[in-house]
Length: 87
Image (cartoon, rainbow, N blue to C red; front, side, top):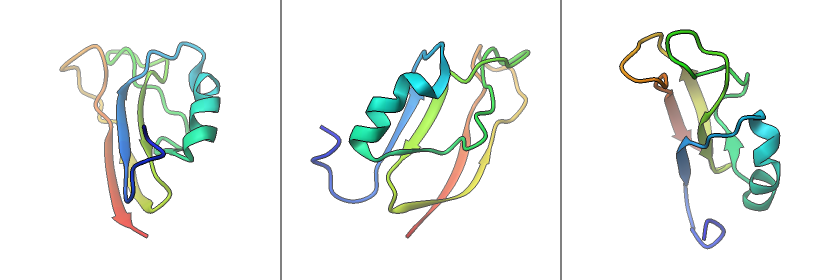
């Protein structure tokens, strides 16, 4: 489905990967998407983040300008804030 999309693409959400990005390795390799969270910062649980379960994956024609995880507890997951520009 993703390979058929032309132009900029963002896939985001709670991926529930308990072993981190290595669970997404084949998906990322097949799609060419990149993880906006380049440092692998944890986002869950929001009151004391220990795991990266939430992802913002983007196509290579988007350039990540800023990424942050605010320290707020509106949910059990922390929000991910990303700013992109077109390549």
